[in-house]
Image: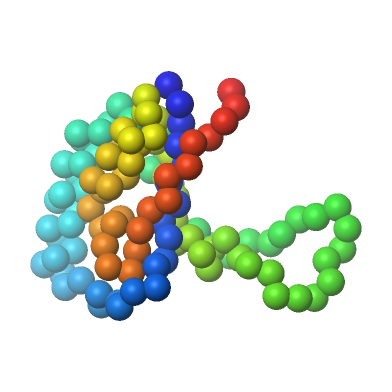
Length: 111
């Protein structure tokens, strides 16, 4: 079954603000239901991206380089028969697709 990388992306949109403690509790409850429903698709629930460093064959000149953790807030890997099925899994994840945040679903080629 193909695998898909799901990158949580920050989108240029109005910030929805931080959820209240009650809203967070509800989101966690919905997340657990989602995780149970799609357990056969969830290869790696991933997590938030932290700091990192670019490794290259030659020393890099100082400059402005796009950093993945500035474009993507987190990742997960799902398995699905089609891109549409992988999108359905990602779209159903509570808190992943909301104002100011979306998910980019990319097929992973290889073994």
